[in-house]
Length: 185
Image (tube, rainbow, N blue to C red):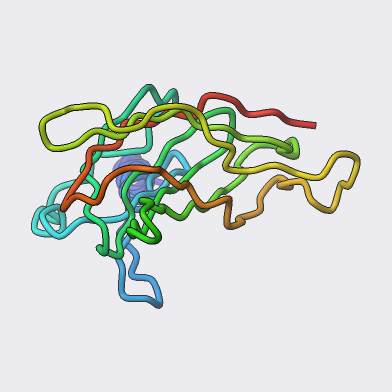
């Protein structure tokens, strides 16, 4: 094989490998778009990010989530915040105001290798003036002791406990949250 052909083949392999390593945008059956990162994480694609699809996406789910703050508007059906800790991905979504409480749904994905038996978040809810309305800890996943079928198994996705906050009704809130505890078995 001539030397030029070998170099051409090596360059072709390197270029195709680099193309495969870039982030990919996928549209779900619901119409929402997500970015699949080459580090096996994903995130929802927002409307302002979709205008920049000509360049590679640089956002990703943080490996060690600290407190993250997000604006919460009751009635908006959208994902608010995704937190990650110890192989647990926690998605907070679809805030509503019901029966004098702010209610947020949770979805959990176990990306780890061990079963999760308990997960707790620490939170602060603030108003538009940054006044703390509620703070504390809430359990988002709790299995039944010694009932292995209730564990959040590795590689599974489940709906977690709803987060309920006793706060006065407002047009918007600020939520600061982090995963405080993940207990595995």
